[in-house]
Image (cartoon, rainbow, N blue to C red; front, top):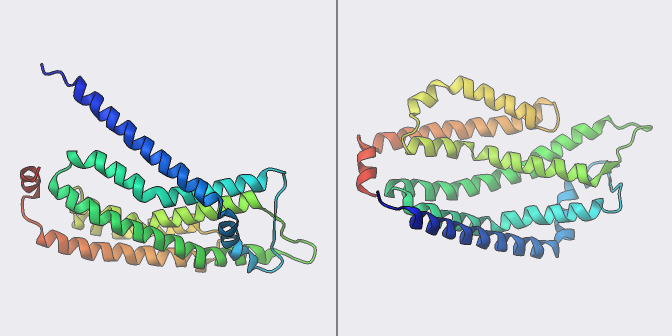
Length: 250
């Protein structure tokens, strides 16, 4: 029996090197982002400043500092994602079929664009709507006094959630392109998926008003329908035996 230990150890060593490179780039981007953390924090506070009588406070001596560190870390992660993805791709690509490589690379690029679209959508539309609704309950005797840590946890959570949700159609398209799922199966589940989208929108939107929920649900439904159209055309152009082609392209 052939000894596979050297190959396994070499893969572990390569994985260790790529993880170290990714960590180094992440730390470097986080440190660089910290020098601009004040500007980044001011930009992220802007949706709250547009609301009447709303201001941020910090309740402990270290709360503001930890918020700056958290914002720097998230910014560093976003800045280092291209390098992290490149290192991950160089590690896994030798074990992929040629057909799989042709699918994953363009979908990854679309994934980044849709993620950024989701982030902008949340920051410029949904969050201002949600904050306006939630802060509308203030009265003369009840004024908002919002702590900085909960506000940024809310803001970053919403932004990352919306970015991830906008990538949902790309995941479906990738599964269809790789032959894991059929367009007919996805189309037959249309009603269930649309209901699921509205349920997720109701859970994630910061306010219970239907306008904020529709702001998230309608774009996701449109992206889902576009995914079905693209997937249908892809399947029509696909060869009858894609598995065989994938094996030959290895």
